[in-house]
Amino acid sequence: MDKLLIEGGKRLVGETSISGAKNAALPILCAALLSAEPVTFTNVPQLKDVATLLALLGQMGVKIEREGDTVTLDASALDNPVAPYEMVKTMRASILVLGPLVARCGEARVSLPGGCAIGARPVDQHIKGLQAMGAEVAVEHGYVHARASRLKGARLVADVVTVTGTENLMMAASLADGTSIIENAAREPEVIDLANCLIAMGAKISGAGTGVIHIEGVPRLHGAQHSIMPDRIETGTYLCAAAATGGDIRLTGAMASSLDAVIGKLIEAGCTVQSEPKAIRLSAPPRLSSVSLRTAPHPAFPTDMQAQFMALDCIAQGTAIISETIFENRFMHATELQRLGADIHIDGNTAIVRGVERLQGASVMATDLRASASLVIAGLTAEGETTIERIYHLDRGYERLEEKLAALGAKARRIK
Ligand code: EPZ
Image (tube, rainbow, N blue to C red; front, side, top):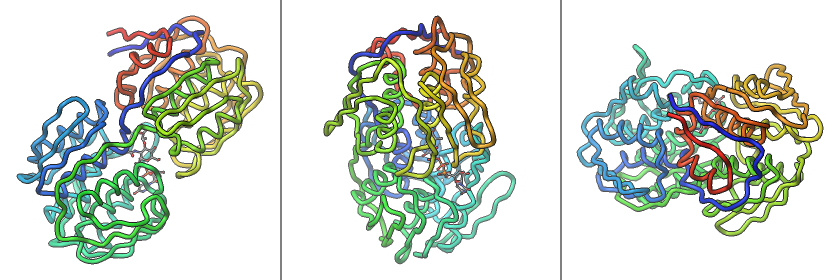
C-alpha cells in the first residue's frame, strides 16, 4: 500500500489549480442514465471514485469515452439496470444510480451501500421517496429492488436533510408523470450543479439550492453538455493547509461563493482571504487563533471540512470546541492527531481541542477520505517527518495531490 511521506515546517506559498468537484461529478455522471442521447461533461476530476462509477455505468451498458477531464456517456443501449455488491461496496455513492434507473428503465437492482468508517449511512430516505412516487421497493439479500412502470409526481418531505437523497429523488422526479416537490431538501452547491445539468438536458426544475425543490416531470431528457463545478472541499482543504503553515497561496479555478462558512472561520482564525471571480487568495499569520465550529447542512459549516479544521485548531492559540452533528463517527482523525502530539478530548459528538505550540512528526494511519486530509495538514505543520499510511483514501477525493502540494512548496512524496 502506498504511503505519503511529509517533511513538516514549510510555509505553503504559491499557486495551484482546483479540480472539478467529486461530489458534483458523481451524481452528474449518474444523470446520463436518464437520457437515450449522449451527454458530455467537462472538468470531470480524475479520481478513483469517478473511475469506479464509470466502471459501474459501463457494466450497465453505457458507452463511455474519456479524454482527459472530458467524459462522454451514451446510455442509449442501457440494458442491465443492476449495481452489484462488488462494485457498490467500494463506493457508497453508487446508490445514486437507483433513482435514474427506476425512472429510465422502470426497474433497478442496487446493492445496499452499507455503512462506512464515518457512520451507518442508511438510505431509507431514498427508498421512502421512490415509494411515494409509486415505486414498488423491496430490500432483500442486501439489494434494493425497485420497480415502477412510470413514477408519479409526489410531495416528498425528507425526515433528514440528505444530499444524495435529494439528488436521487430530483433525478427520478425529472421523468415522473406530473409534478414533484422535495421539501427539507439539501441546499449544497453540488445539488444546484446537478439541477443545472438536468435542466440543460430538458428537465423542468426550480428551487435547487433552497429547501424546497419543484420538479415538473417530462417524458424524456435529451443530450447536453455540462461543466462540473469546482471542488469546494478540495479548495477548503488547501486553504486550511496554507492557514496551518502561516502560508500565502492562490487557488485558481476556485468558487469562493460555495465556501462562505469555511472562509468565515478562516478569517476568524486570523487569516486574510481575498475572493476573485475564479480564484481565492489566503495569507495566514504565524500563529492562528482557535476557532470553534459546529457542522450542519449547507450553508452552515460542512462536515467534510471538520477534520481539516481540527488539524488547524491543534496548533492554534487557545481552545476550540468542535461539534459534529451530521455523522456519528467522524472523529477518527483525532486519535491519529494525538499521535502527533495534539491535545484533543472527545466527548460524544464534541471534541475539545487545546492548541499546542507544535506537533511532532510520526507515522499515522488514514481511515477515511477527509481524515486523511486532516493528517496531511497536520504533517505539513509538524516538526520532522510524518508518514501517512493507507493513502488510497486520499486518492478517492484529491486529484494530483503531491503535484499540487509541491506547487505550493510542500515537501511531500509518495512511497510505493
Ligand atoms: C454526501 O453524502 C457526500 N457524498 C458526503 O461527502 C458528505 O459528507 C455528506 O453528503 C454530508 O454533506 C456525496 O455527495 C457523494 P447525507 P450522503 O445523505 O449524501 C443521514 C466526502 O467526504 N441519512 O447527506 O451520503 C445520514 O446517516 C463524502 O466526499 C439518513 O438517515 O450524506 C447522515 O447522518 C463523505 N437516511 C445524514 O443523513 C438517508 O436515507 C446526512 O447524510 C440518508 C441520509
